[in-house]
Each structure stands twice: as C-alpha cells, then as structure tokens.
Amino acid sequence: MDKEKVIRNYNEYVVPSYKKQNLIFVKGKGSYLWDIDGKKYLDFFPGWAVSGLGHCHPQVVKKIKQQVDILIHLSNNYYHPWQALLAEKLSKLSFGGKVFFCNSGAEANESAIKLARLYGRKTKRYKIISMENSFHGRTLATVTMTGQRKYNEMFEPLPVGFIYAKFNDFSDLLNKIDDKVVGIILELIQGEGGINVIDEEYLRKVKKLCIEKDILLIFDEVQTGFGRTGKLFAYQVFGVEPDIMTLAKTLGGGFPVGAMIAKKEIADLMTAGTHASTFGGSPVACCACLAVLEAIEKDNLIENVKIMGEYLKEKLEQLKEEFKIIKKIKGIGLMLAIEIEGNGEELVNICAENGLLINCTHQNVIRIMPAINVKKQEIDEGIEILKKSLEIIE
Ligand SMILES: Cc1ncc(COP(=O)(O)O)c(C=O)c1O
Image (cartoon, rainbow, N blue to C red):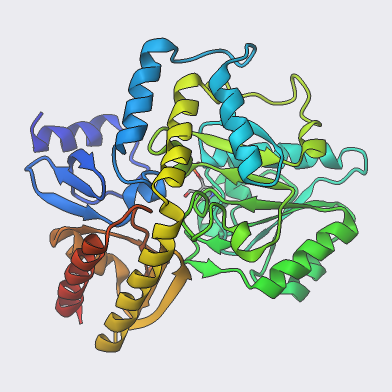
C-alpha cells in the first residue's frame, strides 16, 4: 500500500479521534522505528510507554510466538497456568494482593472504581477523589475521574461521585472529604498532566488520612509502573503502599494488557458475577507479561533506569544551560520532561523531521520517556538531535 493510500484510508475509514503526525511506520526494533520510506527514527516515547522494553523485545516476541501455537485465548470460567503464574508474580512483586486482568489502563481504573464502590456499599460511600490535571482514561467513568475538563465536558451529563482536589495540596484535599468518600486515586507522577512528581510528605499525609477515615488509597501506575521510575513500581520510590494499584502500558511489552491489584480482603469483594472482561488475562497476554517481568529481572533493567535516568537528566540539564527556551527539567528515572517557553508541538515536529520521536503535553512540556533498556549511545544520539532541533527553534 502506498503512502497516499494509507492516509486516504485512514481519512475515509478510521474514526478521526486522534491528532496525527504525518508519519507512517512499518517496523520497530528496540529504541528504533522505521517509516514506510525506510527512514530510521529514535523513539523516545515508545507507544506512550507501552513499548517500555523497546519495540519487539526478543523475549516478548519469542514467548508470544510459542504461546500462539499452544493456546491463544481461554474463557475466564476456566483455569490456565499462565494467569496463575503471572498473578502470583505480580502479587509477590508488589504488596501481596490479588489481581484482576483486563486489556487497558482505562479498564484497570474502571475496575478500581467498581471495587471501591463495592467496598463502600456497607457504609453507603461511593465518591472518589482524583487530582486536578490527572489522567485516568477515556471510558465514561475514567474520563470523568480525569481531572481535566477539556477531556470530559463534551460528554455531560457525567457519572456522579467524582470530586477533584489540587495535586500536592493537603488542605484542599481535606476540604473535599465528606462522609461519602470511599477512595482517593493518585498518579505518583502525573504523566499526561505534565510530569508532576508527588510530594513525599503530602503522600504520607494522604496515606494517614486514608487509614484514619477508612478510605481506599488507589495508585494509578499505568504509566509509572514497570521500572520507569527506578523501582518496579513508583510507590516503592516513596515507600507508601496503596490498597489498590492499576497497571497497563509496559506490562504487556506491546501486547494490550491491563491489571488491577488490590489487597486480598478488598479484592475478595469482587465475587463471581460482579465484574468481568472477556479478553482479560488470556494465555498469550499473560505470556507477554511474564516475558516482560523476566526481561526486567534478567537484564537488570531497574538498574539501567537508575543509571540512564541520571545520565539523561544530566544531559538535559546541560541543554538547559545552553538554551534559554528550556525553563525546567522535571521527573524521575526515565520519566522525564523539559518545560519550554514556546510551542512544544513545533519542537516535537522538528525533532521528528530530524529523526527523534518525543511527545508534547500541556502545550510546553516535552515528555522524554525512552525504553527502560535504552543504551548510553542512544541517549547521546537523542540529545544531539534535540540540540540540533532546539537550535532551529530558539
Ligand atoms: C496514568 C494513566 N492512567 C490511565 C491511562 C489510560 O490507559 P489506556 O489508554 O490504556 O486506557 C493512561 C494513558 O495514557 C495513563 O497515562
């Protein structure tokens, strides 16, 4: 299919709900993508962190291929060994909870909302507090929980029971608490919201409040999970455990997967018939996740994030010294951003022309989130392209 035909087909047959860059990709390997003309791009925002281990990680590819020949899908009314193994691993690697498997971040958060409501039934509580600038997905409930009006105002009337508090502002949170609140959901680093890191003291106060008031503490680790912050989960950076955690993106290494983990006594409220997902936790999906977890461990990728994260941050700080347009470097591990004065989209487009893929959020925050197995020379290459692009824009 030629380029024009691809674009024509999208225009004619695909719902136009995505803003698109004029790029057609046909192949990916590690930190690189190739377009339809064979041009190579360094991908520092691989699939919005879905391809967190780079594109087509060999172990993920191998496991998926092997499993496809054995059993692709199985109804959740039966047992299979791969889901049993993955649930055990996720539970033991986190806070010892039980796992519900689904297919996306939004679905994982939707599951958390439903579980929180089950938990609140006895005491007639149902409200969930989320943060301004948060992002939790696009289903009707999760887009309502997303604390950004631009994403949900056009879908009114919205589901009831969602309240918003200012991120990192404990007194504002206290003002929002009433006797109907059953959950507080937090991204420990707001991703789409502009790479805003949670304040540790604030987080400890929220935890204490949740214990005192019997409110469920829910962490959305859809973007921060699986090594991105220099720990397997971001909550381990701050040493504060949630009651419920939601996961997706890197978990499947490119395969569509979502998961919710909840403390056992809470999880057990989801009795047979209360919740389901037809495709959730299929044998192939679970094998992809198992390969991701194995690769993180075997290849020492958490250590790589720490080393490469520091290296990348240092390089970005150097760029900040050089270019007045850069106002701030934000984030931790390999979840970094530069805040610029000016049009972030323009910089993203120039970088793409120069062979580097990055992302702009909130007009001027440039998200840089390479694969967690990124190599030093790839960071050097990315910084060179960024520098060249900044020279054009400044
Ligand atoms: C923190 C967070 N939660 C939830 C979601 C929604 O995930 P999905 O697009 O897989 O539904 C995203 C997606 O960007 C996210 O970053």
